[in-house]
Image 1 (cartoon, one colour):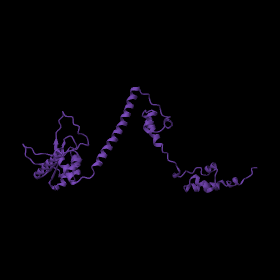
Image 2 (spheres, rainbow, N blue to C red; image 1 turned 90 degrees about the vertical axis):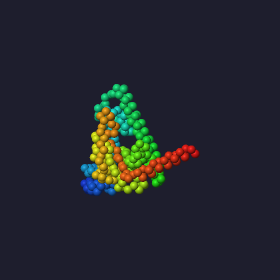
Image 3 (cartoon, rainbow, N blue to C red; image 1 turned 180 degrees about the horizontal axis):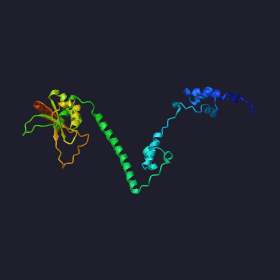
Image 4 (cartoon, helix red, strand yellow; image 1 turned 135 degrees about the vertical axis):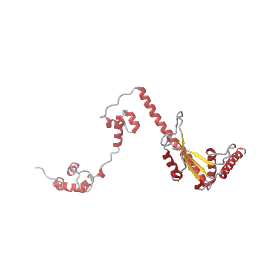
Length: 290
């Protein structure tokens, strides 16, 4: 006959202990909390007491490598070697081996194909590095500009108009303020310049100039939204015919043609623009001679 010890006597009422353990489990307690609450330090007995009761969600350890494992299997099915999967995911070969060992081995590629793949991998890496460096340089340069003063905007707008706007010619006296461009940023700066010059919005006329093969209506709505007027306020669109002998590069959804902006009664404004430009050139000449 087995002699009962104080330790074994404590666990004699298994059903009673199980009822308490199940109740605590359903309250959301972990095994450690149940152990401390019931003073049961026998792990085998503890697991038997809560058998069949699911663990609370908060006690389940997240499996951080599940996504890596799934991606490793995808890459293996695409024919990648352990080395390439390791380079792609940054995990150990031993983990990769466990994750994909049930999948068929990829066919061996000939050396020339492997060389091409390695070269492409290097090119993709170098391209990403160059792109990051390019973005950093552009952002650093943009930060150098800071806020624009009214004088700086006056000079910038004048130089922009003289480079891109319509100009008076000795053989064709027009003195007309008209500006054409396809760059939304350029259009925004030009309109800000006109606002600085106190040009009333009622004096502005807008028109789209675009190839017939493009999305004409989409372009009109795009430019109308940019300048803040209704598409119905635009003048008749100028449609450019396509020369079949010319291979056009400005195609696709990003192509929206050019926006034409004309300032009515602009002769006096044109004369001021030309005067500002002459003043800028004169100032440059004075700097270069000192």
